[in-house]
Length: 324
Image (cartoon, rainbow, N blue to C red; front, side):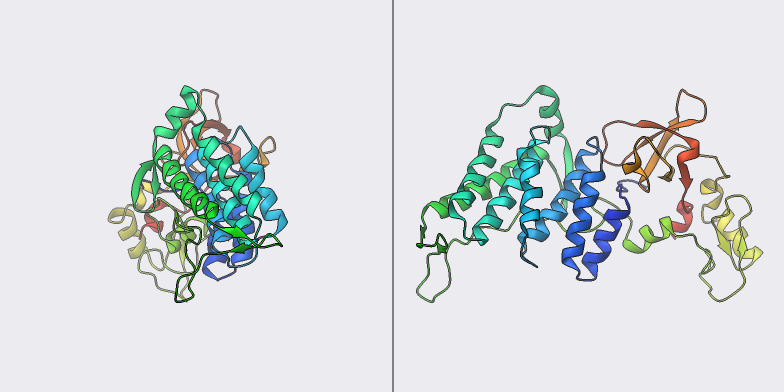
């Protein structure tokens, strides 16, 4: 159960829309997910922000003024981590380049560099030193910033070697064969999907499914199913399959009664009025909170846990079913 990422309904929708080739809608869902994730989930907010910015840089569609406004919002927010601001500064510069806005492009790149040169407080420096999953490797936020800034500087150097036409559009340098030289880099990519997770898409779907379409042991379909009377989340075609799942496949360890939660359980939040943006999110149980009837939960990638009432926690499918 290691490295299972946090996600919410917008994030799940973004991944699904991406897989369906609906890039514009996927980008919008990534942004909504980014806005709803609290600041304590540094690593996961970056994954989702990168999902949004990478779609824009790949030019599956023309970025709108609203897209640019959203990116600028992060760039200008001094409360956002430097990594986020540099990521967005890099993206903003590239999008402005595509639109032929030479001066604004250069300003975006220079601003990203200035953010990278900023002296940070000890708390932020500590956060930047932590390792996060990037593609297939674990690297620190500071190292990722260095890679982005290298691309920023390279693009800026190329930009400074170009001339502009009378209408402000770029006139890129050309090789003898007519191809362009020094097009700004779109690298610094990350795959779009359940980052850092050992669950595939099918298993993620099982996590939030209600079940009851097939036997959770032998996978038989179109038969009358028995339901586990303890958790009401597992279904079997026969008493024999139920025994096998209980004794041999781990249901004994993962079966939970209503209102029963144990450390490391994956659960979903619901009905939160004070922080409605957290509703539908999947978190991990840390343990009982000091206050009776409450539990400490943690979002994957978060630095600290927070307390919620048991009434706001929903059981998901047992992990033995998900991993089958």
